[in-house]
Structures are given as C-alpha cells and as structure tokens.
Image (tube, rainbow, N blue to C red; front, side, top):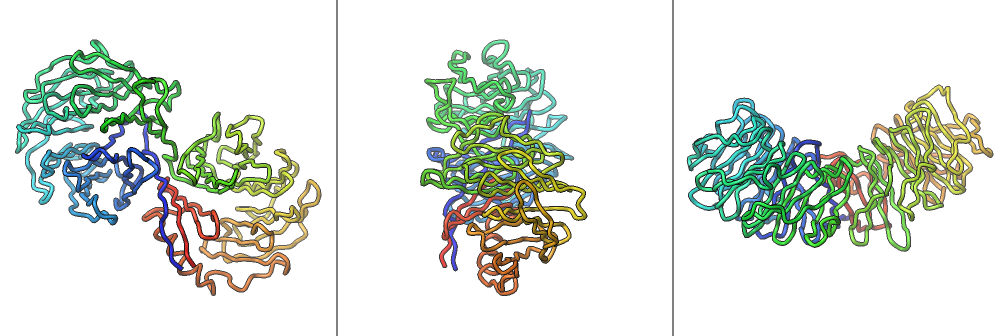
Length: 580
C-alpha cells in the first residue's frame, strides 16, 4: 500500500487577546505567513486553500518572516530559537539555527540584502539582537529599552536604520551597521505594539496601545506628524502595514476597525468596520500587492474591500485551536468534513473547493469531545460545556431548542436510525430519543468512557475504563443490562459499529484495535490488531505517524475507500489518497 498527501487544510493564526499578530509576506507577493502552535503556515494569497506547513520547531512559534531574496524564512519561537529554512524545497531544509537570547521572540526583520537579521522579544538578559544570518555573529546591539520589545524593523534602503517598539512606551532609533542606539522616541503614552518602515525607506511609523500612530523621517528619525490628529483609533493599534508604493498604510485596532491612511495628508481614507463582537478585534494586518488582509481575534483572515468597507471580499475561516473531534457526511453529492476544536468551535469544510464555513448563532462554549451525523441530517455533538447539541447541517444554524443539558460532562456520543442517540458522561450513560433524554444509567460499578448504538437500534455497547465492553439491549425507551460483556485489551478510548452493523471496533489505551463479529455473539475477529493485521500495523500506522509531524492525531475518517482525512492538535485537516 502507498499513500499520498492530497491536500492540507491549514489552521488559522493562533490569537491571544491584546497581543499583536505579525503576518509575513513573500517579496514576490504570492504568499503570506503566520504561526499557530509549533507550526508556520504558508498560504497562497490568491487561493488560500493552497497551503504548506512547516513543523520543525519543538516549541510554540511566534513569528516568521521571509528574507527579501524570497529563498529563506526566519522563524522564532517562545524559547528564543531562530530557525532559518529553505522555501524552495518541499522539505524546507534547515540552513541555520541560532539562540540570540533566552525568551519569547516577538518580531523579526531582515536587511534588504538578506544578510542580517534583527530579532526582539522577552529576553532575560537582553530584549533584542542583530546578527549575520550565516554565522550568527553580532552586528550591533539593541539597547535603550527597559521592558519587553514588541516590534522591530529595518530600513530597506541604505543608509540602514533600525527601529524598535517596547512595553516601556518608547520607540528606539538605531544607526548602523553595526547598529548603535541613537535616541528614544517618547511620543506614546502606552505600549508601542508595532513599528514599520515604508518600502522606500523615507518614513517609518509607530503604533501603540494608546490608539495613536506617529510618522517619522526614515533617515533622521525626526517626528513628522500623528495620523488622524489626536487619535488614530478608539482602541489600541496592534499592527500597521504599508502600501507597496509607500503612499498609504493600513492599521489594525482593538476598536474592531481597520483604517486605510493617506500618508501625505495624514487622514483616514477608509474605515473598515469588522463587527461588533469582542472576537472582531483586529490584531494583525498585511498589505501585499493589491491584497489588504487583516486578522480578527477569532483568527479569521479578512480580505478587505476598499469599495465596500463594511463587508470583506472574503473571510478565511477554520480552526485556530487544536481539533479534538471529526466526522464526515455526504450531502447533495458533496463530502463535508465537520471538526470540533478545543474552544467549542465547529468548522464545516467542503471537500469540493476547500471552503471553510461555520454554523451561525451561539454554539458550544467548551471543547467538543465527539460528533456524528444522524439519519435526519443533524450534527450531534457533545461538549465539555455539559451539553449535547443537535444542529441541522442544511440550515447551518445553532438552535437553543435543539440543546440537551446533561447532569454531568459528556465524553462521547453516538447515533442510530430513528432519532436514537447515546451520550456517555462521567459516571453516567444517557439514552436519548428525538432530542430528549428518555433513560439514564447511573450508580455504575465502572467508569464509562465511550459508547456505540447498533445501526439497527437493538444494542447499546458501552466501553469502560476497566477494559470491558458491556452490551445493553435497547427495549423501548430503556437500556436493559443482561449481563453480557466482551473484553478489550485495555481501558476503552473509542468505539464504533460498522455501517452495516456486522462489526464492532473498539480502541483502547494500549493503542490496540479489537474487532468483534456481531452475528457470532461478539466473538473476536481473527485479525485483532496488532497481531495479524499487517496492513493496519505497518502502512496505515505509518500514515498516522507522519500525518501531522510532532503533533497528536486526534481523529480520522474515511471519505471513500481510497480517501482518508486526519485531524490533529496542530489545528489542521489533511486529506490522503491511499492505493492498495
């Protein structure tokens, strides 16, 4: 058997309230970059469904920037490591690795000849460093700040200049190389979140938590003006990005707007209103060729429309937190992947065009532990918010009336024809019919972990932490314990009946899959993995081993007999083609 990675459905940027998100753009204007967890995500700007993921950082990556040559990317993580890696090869070979200081790296800048790199952040002994990309030798000192440095940039024309912005409310101006501190910029009254030179090097700007954006001469550092007069934004400004011709810039703010500024007149030409919810705060932006991008606190990537500032041209959706559950469903001849993440978000991914969508309204507020689609085209989900939800996959809308509150936290849910559902909760098994609780098994002498209803609705199988699978008969609205059970190889983690109801597959903590034959009184099928199932043991396990490198695979589902999808704690979805 062979397998091939057919498609990567990338995660969104990982966002944090009140923390700027740096987006990188490649010099040719084709791709943009951001980070999520231990991954660097490269996306095609014209078709963001085309994506690549770099996963070689052992720690959470915070920022990534292309070299002006376009051949390399420098990415920095929370431990203070900088990795410089190749963009031209599929393998993204590592060129150099450095540790300029110990602590989180928050921003990176290159000189225009791609030979020097500046990085800043939360160092213990120092907050920044400038070094040669090929030797790591220092080419100056980033000093003049008393607190964490949030942002750095280098003038892309000679003579070189370097600017930085810090939590000490100051900017700092440097000449070089070797770069030497010249003076502090003290115009901001709160944290300086972002500093950026114009592409032509004539000006730079600083943006702060005080809602202000100041403009300076790129060569001398002299102050020119404040954009918008007294205040540029009502909330803190987290990011700015210049137009390619240096005449305009965009700014992203916690006031839930992005503004397009004319630098010559220092006035706002357009205000993009991104919404009214706290998740609509804007924490990052990028001007790349004709594309104006911003990133919301939700992680959604917005393509801004100058002619319609209240509605983006497109919004890229998906997951920004680790994916915990997965199911697939065919609707109208098209396959859809439903995935639930750590924050309660459920994403709908259409396999046809790689388009992500979500349900409207208020959904789960905590980790989605399990999901399945029933015969009434309802997505049945259970969450650590102590609810089981039934959501129409055609209406794509959460409904308060289709929510069932559990007494305790549900861990697992399964469905069968006729409106039947089985929720396995902490210390409880709940039988549901037509979105209502009809029977509860509690005061159990074991801890239930997972459950499955036979497609015919005759049997409910419940797997326990003791390694036993108990078989209850479904009698009307009750579950009857007739003393029947079978043994797994260890504490049960998941289970499912085959679609035709002929087999029950059970997985356990020892990573063993045991298959039982239903018609033969639940006898163990002869190829209980890992004993004789060579296919499962070698080929498929290799897929999972490499599927999401350095990340836990949280779910897998078959689209058809040759197509498999996997989800992971890296918040991405991958589609595989298998050939037997």
